Image 1: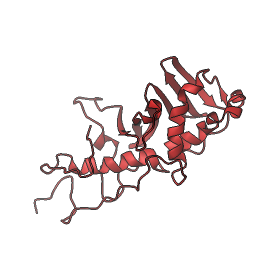
Image 2 (image 1 turned 60 degrees about the horizontal axis):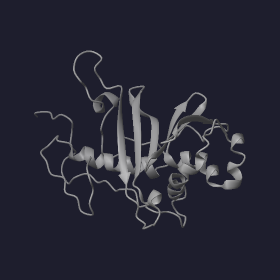
Image 3 (image 1 turned 180 degrees about the vertical axis):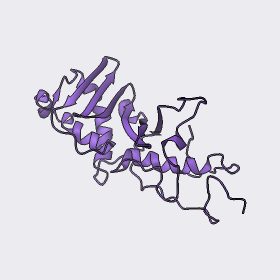
Length: 225
């Protein structure tokens, strides 16, 4: 973990991960507020292909099958409801697809409840988890495109926020858990992400701006000449 303060200094020698932290700060923002899946090679960063990023344990077939990127967001608004003041935890898992990192699982958690989504051939598979148990469901309507992000996930789950719609929830989901009210604080927090320009946005900020250092463009390896 790397806690970020209003002013954060990152100090280290070459090839110790300073640029990686800067790149992942932008990746973390994209996981929460982006409209596309994260790009690990967006200028000025070039993290390479999946095999360049995933940990290698040594030996044949010892490359990590997946890696994850996560971010924890503290609530920026004061509230008497503990469920709304808990930090929002977002985690994404990436697997190799055609040699590139592909977002395969997205999980958002707050307090003791979480919702995760995974892409499948049939659309989107959603898992609700709470102290009462874990339930996997599939939305009956088609998933909103191939992009997996929190905004699209919220639009799939948004009908559950409204009581009159929850009364006919069987028309929206198959196998929806009975304890939907447990997840309402989490869905309310996600509404600030689904509608970032609306009055309910609790913790939206501008996308991090990344600039290259004032020097020659850094390379993974250097030619002695």
